[in-house]
Length: 268
Ligand code: DGL
Image 1: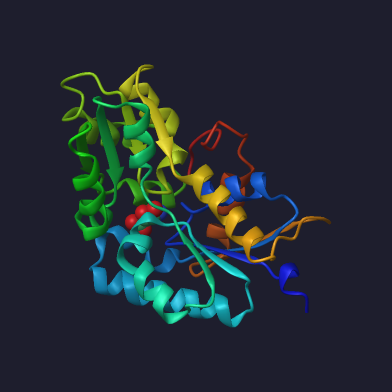
Image 2: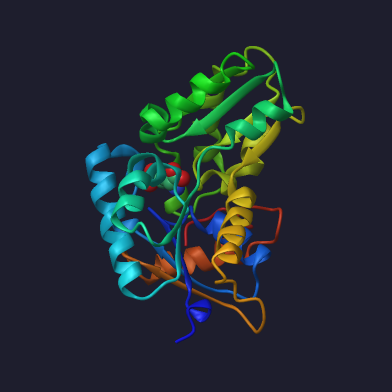
């Protein structure tokens, strides 16, 4: 089979990576995508680094065994814990990992105040500390782990009292002075962007790594001569938990562009 016709795998701990899948589909509508969410083991952000690494390796093996031509790790937590080991295990494969868009935020708001929301694993891993060291002289960077938020989004809650209460509590410490940017360093968070906007007000720019990751994937495929640049594309969604999670992923994928939230925020 022509390798260019093979699907691009997109992986996350659950439904969060659908926010990246949306950007990938927008950027490369003619590609076939195979999305795998590991909701049985979510949230990864509450696990040990070793556990996240083992789960990510197992998912990657399952996807490569199915003949995908590239793997997009649409999970900041899995990238932080496992991207090096993935690349050394499959050195010949195209593997793209999403990371918090801190560089972009600092470049656009030099000298400003930037909050970075991520999971506990992402915030504590060396990868993030290296990023922090690189940019902390240019801007004031405030890392925020948001325990409990991924669980709500996995339950289909993208709006409402529980989501806004949790966000308010997490963001409060960063809002004592005006913020210039908020980086969504977890792929689940774009689905609660409207709630975040309500709390931080109009001033800060809210950034995520989805678009950058999609463009980078397109570039890597083109470079390898593996772009499927004609014909009709498709999206197949699978989840380790159950069909309800596949349904929720579909609803999130089909939510209106730019809305980044389910219409009513109710559980599936
Ligand atoms: N969506 C994942 C990320 O980008 C993490 C969610 C989880 O904790 O499982 O970090």
